[in-house]
Amino acid sequence: MDKLALAGRRAVVTGASRGIGASIALALAQAGADVAVTARSEVELEQVAEQIRAVGRRSLAVSSDVTDPAQVERLAAAVQAGLGGVDILVNNAGGGASHKFLNHPDELWQRMLLLNLTSVYYVTKAFVPAMVEQRWGRIMTIASTAAKVGGRYIAAYTAAKHGVLGLIRSLALELAPYQITVNAVCPGYVDTPMTQATIDNIVTRTGMSEAQARESLEKTSPQQRLINPDEIAALVVFLAQDTSYGITGQAINVDGGTVMA
Ligand SMILES: NC(=O)c1ccc[n+]([C@@H]2O[C@H](COP(=O)([O-])OP(=O)(O)OC[C@H]3O[C@@H](n4cnc5c(N)ncnc54)[C@H](OP(=O)(O)O)[C@@H]3O)[C@@H](O)[C@H]2O)c1
Image (cartoon, rainbow, N blue to C red):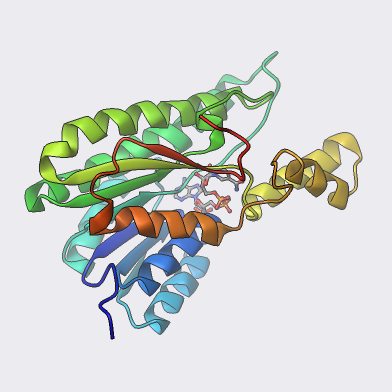
């Protein structure tokens, strides 16, 4: 049998209890990696870890809040102890909330930046030293097409995701001497609980039916559909491989052709 592409690699995925993060964690395991999963919830997280073990890999479920640097430090120590190190980091935890800019709550601004940008800084800072020491690493951050273009009523989320690209591009340069690549994946609307919350919000605010609200999101894509989480996971697995060494500092859209820059 051919050796799996990620055999012997150790990965950590944030926000892995559901949605895109759970798909990524499972796809990395299917490609041969041992995978530590983290999110705040414990029950859902353990279920994902069980699925990973069922494909024959080691897994570790560590409950942790990525917005708290002390918890992130404990996460890094737990992964080091549990898997013996880390080769692949996927910064996936994040979330959106909308508000018109007039009377925008400062609390929402701070919360969106903390969850979608500063958390990526905390988590990456905690895991990079081990990668530098071993002179190999793959860092992927799930940004958004909102990292490339503006959107109405999502100023804070959009600013945070744009910020992620600044961070990963700078890190790609700084970490290049250590065989560490740093990239972002920029999804359009993906069929996950986060998008379901967006659909529910549209229903509440506009009176559309759920089907109409879903269709309004599908229509934003030239392919007239939502992206499947597995499509994001497939790109992450590709970027994690040895053969993707030449790809760094990139922000790759997976959005059915909605954004072409
Ligand atoms: N869905 C989309 O259409 C879409 C499009 C573009 C980009 N994205 C990005 O893709 C990523 C994943 O989105 P998704 O759709 O899979 O979202 P989701 O279904 O809401 O899942 C979010 C994940 O992040 C975790 N999480 C949230 N806050 C956290 C915190 N403070 N600390 C640790 N974990 C936390 C959640 O677990 P707990 O609640 O248990 O902590 C969950 O596992 C996000 O960064 C999002 O911005 C999504």
